[in-house]
Length: 447
Image 1 (tube, rainbow, N blue to C red):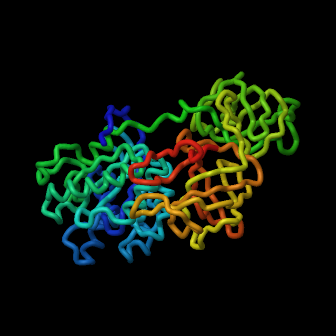
Image 2: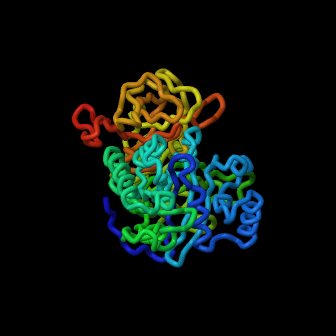
Image 3: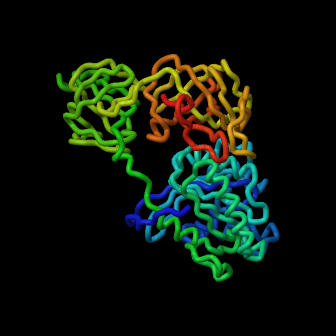
């Protein structure tokens, strides 16, 4: 599974996340990237070296650079998503170091949801484990554009080419079953730095790039301004208090972040879910007036007609506007401690809109051993399953395969406000290892 490499524009931003099982070395790899790109302050490195000596280590434990919570340092594990920033001469990076423990899979979903690439670590001694499969399934469902498989601790198997090829074959088999089209494996030692920033002489049989070289070469994510125009309304702006003049008293604007596409003054737009059409009379950015706005700018739109618009509505281009619906079939990653059951009522948050929803049916759950969908009556913590939801009011959702933003949603417990699931509209689960990813005919779940 090869990817076509194009030279990225100097200074382009790449968002990456780590994934993998417990003790696969994610925090150490992140620390090594920060160290080898000279993104660590001297006093930080000195503190890590001092703590490492106190623990009887002969070298700095670079994992301490990322484990910021006291509980993380004491237990030697990663609990929360740790965001780190570093840069090379070619581009800048935002990295989400995600936990490996099963109970923190919800954090991995959070860190991977906006990633351009996931670095999936696999211990060369252990190969593919259940949590490896779970993280790869999450990566596939979230449609992360690129996957890099770091076959870590290659030094502990004497830099064996045979071991590397066996682990790579295991990962590629699972990737194909899940429909992951782009997975590149690199043998690395995060502890010693082999094939992290530079290629290692201890793996002469490996002719590919180092991890950092590959990250610098990956093409940037698709520009959201090339997609259809969508602006979820976050706030209706009206004058407050004494108006200064008539124009100010008559001002009405609809503020939000352009989620995708471009909008220009004079464009015809439709407000969803009402379906009312109008034209854009003006675009304001702070105290400036713009001729056009594009993702991800936060702007205020002024419309030519007076329309009843409130927070949660979506202003969209007319030609490709989604059809609002009250019935959704979607794949969800269940993150709640209590199981999800049919008939359960939850809040669904899509963009800036929140509506009540009910679980009509649970239509299957992903078996991480067979990588197929099995019948299920409930979804337990960390299960990935297919559900049918009924909403209290129409929501302009889109198919996740078309739009990661328009096709994603959260499910929230109305009693305590906790997020209990992340969902992808129109996504499917594999039904057999050799079956197509998208079912056909009546089994094709369309909105």
